Length: 324
Image (cartoon, rainbow, N blue to C red; front, side, top):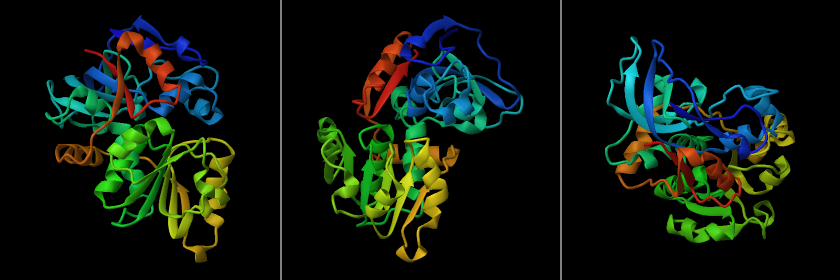
């Protein structure tokens, strides 16, 4: 089969189209013929290899997972003897990172628990754009309690895959939403329902004097004290992505020390892929409440170009790799 393989860190130039064997499913696995996969920030970080923590996870000296790609959509080709939920021919989607990635290829094997049935109303491209970004958005907004009507929500990094879905989820819950990203993305964000937009190249949202009930930060890199300043009494800050260095230490060690009297809470979301949450995303899609934003679609052979575009930071929503 064809797959995008990389064997050293550095840049998208390391991504090469190669022939590798079709994997064989174990007893609790399914073999999926991939129709589409999408790029997430972890894929980018694992290609570049600059973050030490991710290298400790993904291979210190060289990549442990030579085929990346977590978000997939496709058809089940074969199943292991202990698989009960799926059968050949089923259309599925999910985040397969826990099984070792492998989505930028024609076939992949993964644990059946990581997959859900794709809605017939979804294209494979739409389905591939939903799993990780959708689950991060959904679980991030639930962190420290669900969104309530009338709450003021801020999403930093709102124009990407997670942010565009979190915006739609927050609006459907009745929140007033402020989006932080590049000004070039404002029209798209307003079209999804954003009430206010902040250009991060012009304003630091933690220094505007505005305060929020919930802050969801996809690219967090400031000090804990900055985030505390942006929260109303009783407000919450959830870090979904961003700095893996000093800020991560602050969030794990210092944030819990904030005096309880303020009622403010800061923390890192513990992400878990769950079939029931994938099913909820499907229900919201079918109800017209959630629509993945697809910026560009590339063929598998052009995956390196797709990563180069992803690395510009100008992506609106998701970049999808098609594997017909």
